[in-house]
Amino acid sequence: MIKTVILCCDGDSSDPDTWSNIPFMLESSLRSKGINIVRVDLSPNPIAKFMWRYSVGVIHKLLHWRTSYDFFRSRTHAILTTARMNRAIRRHGGEETILINTSISHAPTLKSIPIILISDWSYEHYIRQFLSRSPDYSERTTIKRDKQVASRASLNIMLFPLSSKRLSAQIPSAKFIYISHVTNIHPCAPMPVNVIRNPARSTNPKLGRLSIVYIGRRKYLPELVLLKSIMRDIKNEVNLSVDIIGIEEDEQRIFPKSDSQVRFHGYLRKNNSSQRNTFYQILDDADIMINLTSPWGPFSATLEAMYYYTAIISPPYDEFVEVFGEDAEFVDYIYNSDPRAIANQIRKLIMNPQLLRARKCAARIAPRVRIVVP
Image 1 (cartoon, rainbow, N blue to C red):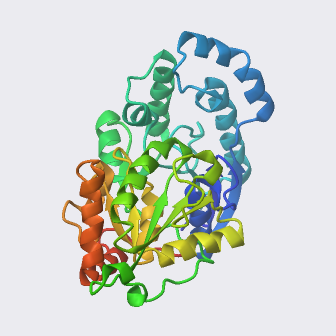
Image 2: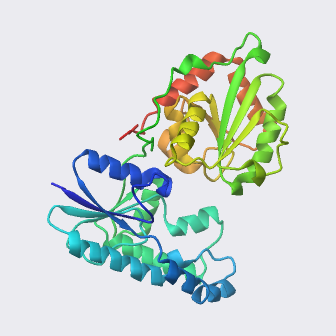
Image 3: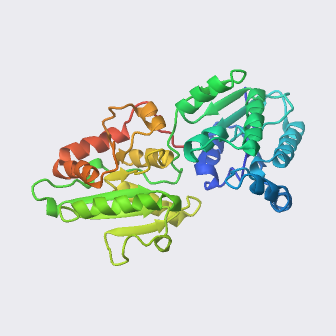
């Protein structure tokens, strides 16, 4: 019987803004079961980080100017972080206590209590998949240490199925499992409204209303060029509105400020009640969530949108297809980045409100993903 969890994360686990709400939701769920939580903030020491950055960090940049190796990945930070977790075990460890860290990069060396690590993917996968290159020397030293850390843990829980399979093959001495992905709906989020509240009309498309939501970051600005082309293709056929979350209006120059169809909201924080309500209101109003990033997408935000009866248009990136399959009823997969082809996919939904409604209903009850609201 577990009575106490030493919950470690890079930040404050009581703050919904920390790592996509996952530590916050985990802590909320554990507390609801009567489990005592001991928080351990593993944020980098600011003084050590500053000194490292302008000494050892400079050397690493000179040797490998494209490196992603930073203080967080450094041996110095690993030593400091391991010491913090060991200290927490000495103070709070016991027979009915476990330690959970929301990272597979750091684990305590003390093994007097079970150690569980939670993560989305490995550092090596990040470099190969998102940076599209092989790891440099500094990065390889971190990857080697990460493998040792994963082997020390009692259990490694991965948020994505292919990540679990990949790491199980790469580190046979460690135990990896994928349980399921969950929606990280904030406990104060409003319930979704009826799915038929906002249908498009097929009798006269120009009288119809279609609301699209796009969630991304500044590095995805090129995708907004594609989005603009898609909108230009269909804007005369429907009363269209587009909400863009995660990008400020002044961070881009793609859409003219006079374009009233597009609203930029920037990053909406869930620890701010007003911004949180805006976020969920947008999802509640949206008919379609569109993802235009082929290698990846806002997976957790997509699940939240699905919870609010939102149909999905997205490239078939591997983890999404692994979870939901190639024939999921709620999603229209994008197999090329031709704006006219994507516009036609949206046009099909505009002209067929029954199909749109079916997509939205299927999103709400999508299989293989558990809807969990603490």
